[in-house]
Image 1 (cartoon, helix red, strand yellow):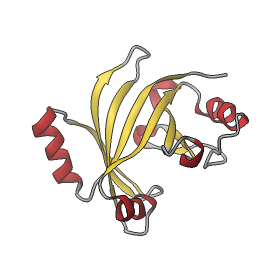
Image 2 (cartoon, helix red, strand yellow):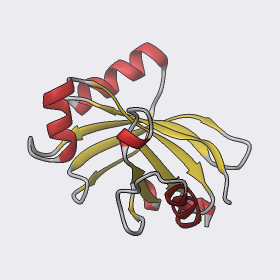
Image 3 (cartoon, one colour):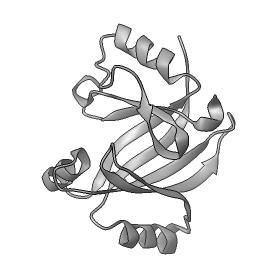
Length: 144
């Protein structure tokens, strides 16, 4: 069995990325470490680095603005309003970790991991199998 080594990020859905980034900057002093548009996920995002971790990875706040109202985050935002969308755990091997979790009866949403932020590989676990929490597993580009 693999191992989850850190909270990689907490994903937060927002209506206006620039305004939300400014809040995190002025309130907490967090700066944008990386920003990108992920067409496949239908989001414009900003990664705000919180700290480095003992395994050489880092922990981030990921701010997500949907590109369209009918994207997954767009639909979620319409239903729930702004707030915590998902939590992501870092692992050195997202493939092995997804398989191990799947064997425990938790639904893994992708057959094989997809492209995430900053060259990472990601998959998601069904929130109904995780006590209501949409959970992401992430292997950073630096982990492999």
